[in-house]
Length: 46
Image (tube, rainbow, N blue to C red):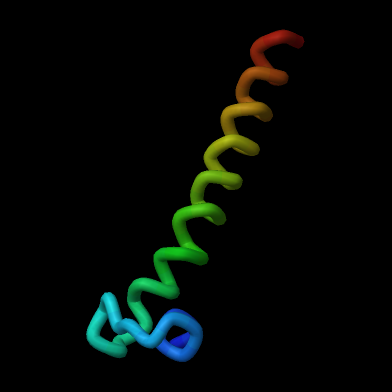
């Protein structure tokens, strides 16, 4: 998971891959949060 290093030539996380993991994990967590909030709102309307 070192695509940032290979594309841009910089290593913001020292080569550990944690930055790339965050680039994946943060949007996924946001999508899950929005989905759960939407389901909670739908249940309250019923």
